[in-house]
Amino acid sequence: MLTRRDSYKQTDAKIALLGSRHVGKSAIAVRFLTKRFIGEYDSSQDFTYQFTATIDDDQVNLEILDPGPESTGESSLESRTLWADGLVLVYSITDRKSFEEVRDLHNLLIPFKQKIVVMIVGNKSDLEHERQVSKTEGYSLAEIFKCMFVECSASDGYPKIAEVFHELYREVLKRKKDRRMSLSPRPLRALGKVFRRNSSKNLLLAPGSPSL
Ligand SMILES: Nc1nc2c(ncn2[C@@H]2O[C@H](COP(=O)(O)OP(=O)(O)OP(=O)(O)O)[C@@H](O)[C@H]2O)c(=O)[nH]1
Ligand SMILES: [Mg+2]
Image (cartoon, rainbow, N blue to C red; front, side, top):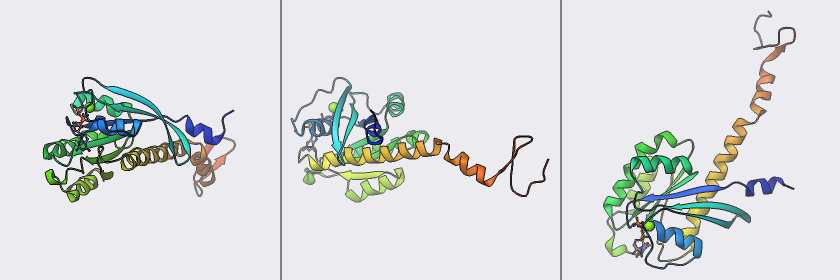
């Protein structure tokens, strides 16, 4: 039997990683899925992982897309954005061009902004000596996107990477609940209080309207 709590467990959050080549998309995905950093990753094709994570004491079914070579092209961006509930936009703090590629996604994502939750991730924060993008620039970009932002390192450890997915999931869940609320009949009931029903003609009339 489904309890209210279980019904949320059914909710698959689909999360896609996007970003330039070699920024660490696969390393981030694999770190979250296995808690390990293995160094080299197959980038020949898309990989979609199904994974049950414990988030806020709930068992949550996630689908995570780690894209192959075509990650930020306009058409693949659109299909991935249509598929996903959440996007992790990854750049490397050691690669300014990868940061600019994330910035260029802003306009392309505008049509999806009601549907999708976005987090910008500046990866490879362990390589401070090779830094090309400041943290402040990361935060400024997140302000433009009106989204979450974090710097992290897939090579450095699990907790911060896990927090990326956990936080994104929490926002996806919130968005889904809000959407359910807005689709529920409650607003109609509230409307019924504002409008009185004309029983003979079954019309809704605002208070103060002349009777028909
Ligand atoms: N120092 C450091 N290296 C990293 C980090 N994340 C990934 N790398 C390395 O960066 C290289 C690229 O990582 P990938 O995870 O394959 O990057 P990707 O974005 O999936 O690349 P493509 O699939 O080719 O687009 C690999 O050599 C990783 O070991 C990190 O946080 N710190
Ligand atoms: Mg990869």
